[in-house]
Length: 292
Image 1 (cartoon, rainbow, N blue to C red):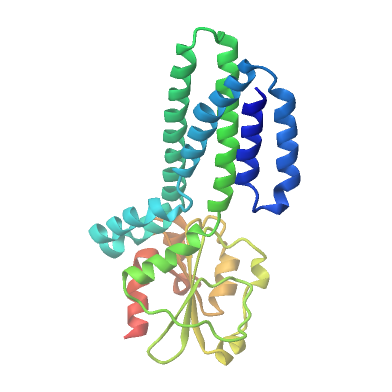
Image 2: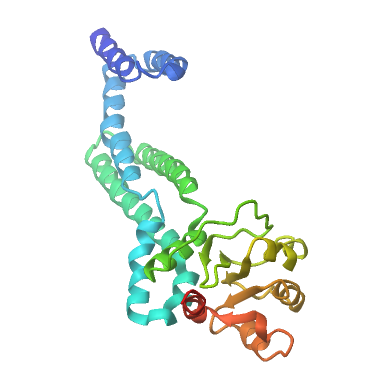
C-alpha cells in the first residue's frame, strides 16, 4: 500500500513539476488522496475511476470541436454552390444555428458513447449496487456537462460576424483597410473599396437595437473619411422601425433584409423608406456594381 501511494505521488509530482503556479493545488490534492486511500479497495476504486471515467471523459471532451466554423463552412459553401446568390439569406440566417447545432450534436454523441461504455462496465461488476451505479453515472454526467460548458463558452460569440468574411472570400471580393481614426458606434465587420476610391462598410447583425438614435454618423464625417455607404445585413428585422430606417438611411446606411421579410415588403412599397432597404440576395450584385 505504501509503495502504491508513493508511486502515485511521484507520478503526479512529475506531471506537474513545471507548473509552479499549481503547486499548492497539487500538494492539496495529494494530501486528500493520502487521506482517502487507506485500503486496497480504495486504491482499486481510484484506478477504476481514472481508467474508466476520467480518461474517457477527457477523450470525449477533446473530440468536441473548439470552433463552430467547422460545422458551418462546408454547409454554407454548399448552399452558395447550389443556389448562388439566392442562397445568401439562408446562409446568413442559419450561420449561427448550423454551428451551434453541430457542436451540440457532437457533445451528445460523445456523452452517449462514454456513458454507455461506463454503464456496461459498472453493470458487469456484480459487487456494485444499483444505487452506487446510479451515483457514479450521475456524477459522470455532471462532470461531462461542467467541462463541455467551459468549452462552449470559448466557442461562443463572433459567429455571425464571421459570415461576412466567408461571403466576401467565396465571391473573391477583395477587402480594404478600415479608414484610419474613423469612429462609428455601429461596428463594421468588413470594408471594400469602390471603383471611385470611396469605402463601403459591411456589417452583419441580428438586429439594430442598441442605442440606435446615437449610432448614426453625419454625412460630413462620412465625406471626410470617404465612406460611401454602410451596408447592414440584418437577420431579425421586426424591430427595425420606420424611425430607425429613416434616420440611418439618410446617413447613407442601407439595410439588407431577408428576401421573404414582412418589413422588407412593407418598406419597399413605402415612398419614404424604399431607398433604404434591399433583399439580402441583392448584396453581392450591389457590391459588384460598386467595384467594377
